[in-house]
Length: 158
Image 1 (cartoon, rainbow, N blue to C red):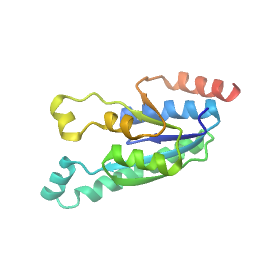
Image 2 (spheres, one colour):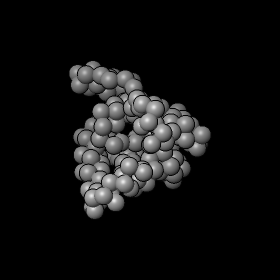
Image 3 (cartoon, helix red, strand yellow):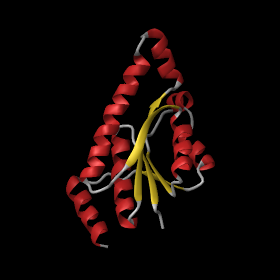
Image 4 (cartoon, rainbow, N blue to C red):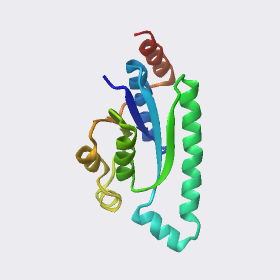
């Protein structure tokens, strides 16, 4: 069903949930895995850059490190992932990369936000559902390490 799965990863708890659920889905379908990490260039980051020179570069460096850790983790799980780190608006960059790699499933995490934070950072989920040309999985389930590895083994056997 899904032969090309894109995992959006930002290093957060929600991002780790998306990475796990995406890895399980990719294993079940025997899919190629793509990983994208977006160093957000939001209004808040731009204000931080104006107040503190180098904030954007530090954010980019952090995302490169998180990306490399996630790539290594996916390789340890037996995948041969491809991916990249970009800077920009996360929803736009995810949709662009999904088109570029011809993803059939995009997996993202979900973080609850208050009204002010939602206004400040935009409507990522709404943008993605309107602009993706493939299925979207919003990962919300957290599972223990033991359950994850049991599920992963089951997905390999099935």
